[in-house]
Structure formats: C-alpha cells, structure tokens
Image (cartoon, rainbow, N blue to C red; front, side, top):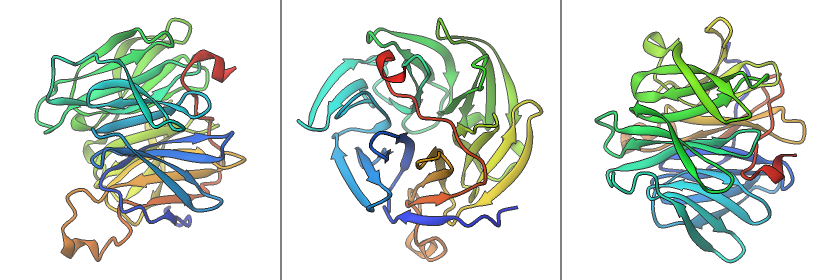
Length: 297
C-alpha cells in the first residue's frame, strides 16, 4: 500500500492543476491550471512546459489534431490554435448561467467531448454534464450536479463512470457508444468514509478505476465490478486533482495537484503542491482519445 515511488516531474506550483491528457504522437502531457486561466503542454522527456494563456477559467483541454485543442472554459466550448494563438468560441451551453464554469472533461472513442459544469463558488448544485458532438452541436445529458468531475468508460464501452465531487460519489451509467447516450444513473462508490473528495479519474487496461483524492493525499485504485478499493498510492500533496496514463507504453501514471487554499505555513508540509507527479503503478493504462472522429481511427 502506497510504497510505490511517486516522483515530482514538474514543479509547476499550479494554483489548480487539473485535467491531464496524454498525446501519444507528441509524447506530451496536456494539462490545465484552471484559476490561472491557462493550459499547458509538458514534455516529460525534456522537462519543457509550454503555457497558453486563455484569459478565463479553463476547466479541461482535449487534443483535436495538429496544433489544435478544444477547451471547456467559463464561457463554453472553444477551440484554440497553438500555432497562431487564436481562440475560437464554438458554443456556450450555459450563457444564461454566468456564475457557473466548466470543469473536467474527456473525449470518448467516437471523438465526442464530454464536459460538465459547476458553480464557481461551489455552493449549489447548479451544474450539468454536456456532450459536444464532432459537428459542434451539443446536448445536456445529466443535471443537478454539484462539482462535475472525473469521467471514464468501461473497456467494453457498456458503462460510463462519472464523479460529482460535491456529493462525494462516483456514479455509473449505462452507456450507448454509438449514440453517445447515458441512462440509469446509480451510485457505484460512496466516498463518505474515504479521505478527501473524489476528483479526476482514469481507467487502466484491466478495467480498474484510478481516482484522485482532493484533500486526501493519494490516488486510489478501485474495482468497478464490486465497488471495492484495491490500493492507494500516497502523493506528497493534499489536493490531488486528477491522473492519466502516459509514456510510450502507457505505464506511467501522471498526477496533477493544486496549491489553492494553501497557506504559507502549511506549504512546508507540501513544498511541491501544485506539481505534476509520476508513478509506475505496475499496470498499463488506456489511451487518451482526441476530439473529432477522424483522429481516433
């Protein structure tokens, strides 16, 4: 338990580092610093980290072809060209809810971008989960969400897993991959007795879930068939936000974290809070999907 060696790979000092995704062609880890209004591209082999300032909260980033990403921001879905530094608004599902912002999101195997919202002050359950189709149309698929967070799909694509951090629950839906539809939400894992709140999530090649614990100093591995916790890996930061598998063999788990709310006197306990960490957990992961169907064939 927790003896696996977690290493700091980027001392990013991110206020709210989140949403890592792995680009296998570039061998790069994309991630966001939500409160610093930017996303970054990190090359683990060289240690280089490029920042792209967007100018508003960026909840999630997904790759969408060469030099293109799609972002889930405070003002909806937008595409960004990294070569030209141009931001293009696509659609804003919550233009009528100015006090909400997008949070975590991920693409499915058909290239659709699933992303959810939350109230910026995190008081009410005003959030929803949306799907951005590859033609830029969108649908609302789940509502009454506190803090929309981690998303993953079962290996057979029959189920979708989804975290509402505010409710401390991991939900499971029936999932129709062809139509991109979810149904029958039910609680899979209740975090009430766990340390911290469930945050970001990914799935490994054995179909087990990896969940980051906000205020819990760890990532944990769970069996979604039984809802049982299999193991926990300690992280030297309290606010662990998300995780994704990367590396040539998808055998490295990259972990993001946050410094938000950390007072100076506490920073001594966790000098690298807000950093990106990596560990080889002994299992391989699943590939990060890109936006737009043509990229996932």
